[in-house]
Length: 347
Image (cartoon, rainbow, N blue to C red; front, side):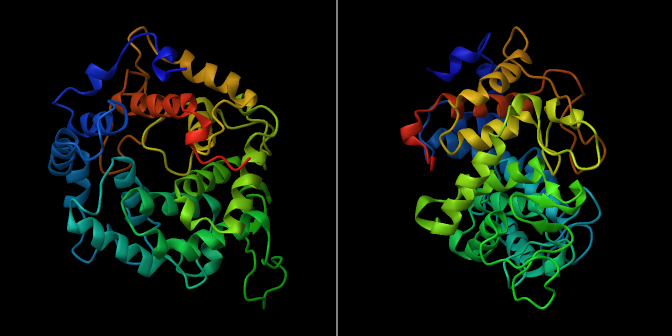
């Protein structure tokens, strides 16, 4: 099945409008069927780095490679280094296009990545969390960093999912152990009342699915399998995952937004699973129907969750057709429709 069959109309001409260099670049790269190194894609990529959101964010970077304040870069939300790097990756920024991105990646890995492989809010291993680990591992790969430089981070992330070689939180003198935030295997999180967190699970699975096959060790393959089983347990369309301190799932699960930081949604869950070859799994059928139902008659998706005034750039009015959210939806549907044999499924 071609992914265009999910659409009520073709929004690609809208996404390719030259006055929107950021979405034009990503639409050419990801949706138009052009070779990634074609002259048209490379030209659009250069333009997107010189104009629009990428240029704005990079213009706010300090020369040493951080935003707002030095250090691990988690605070203040959502203008500090962590969020700038994640947003740049979602915008399609690449280290080969601007040396400032190289400086930023090196700064982040120096100040937020511990010797044990944990990305952390505090520069100490105890400041790690699944959502942060997954977001940054994915973002740094997406920006074009060498996977070998992130191998230890991926190994920790995988072990934290499966529990192999990781001591309980109570064993304070163990060389590798869980902490109050990242408190146990299978995406257990202190912020979710020590229960498995689907938000963190989605971020981890996005990152693991992004890692090239040649870099996937046995433990990483085990983590992908276990993570997929968790996200497919039950009905993702109903978000029947552990809710921690709440009696019901967050309504944000069904609100599609841009950018996507630690808050996640149904669409990103489907994207993570489709990227490992599970887009045609029967348990995703209802979730895919929900995604499709949100488009208008012109094949455009609205912005339902935003960070208006909270980060470096605003991405359009709420509840109006939005190019960035539409890009997310089309890439997800394209991944869903792809031949599983061409993906990286481990199940």
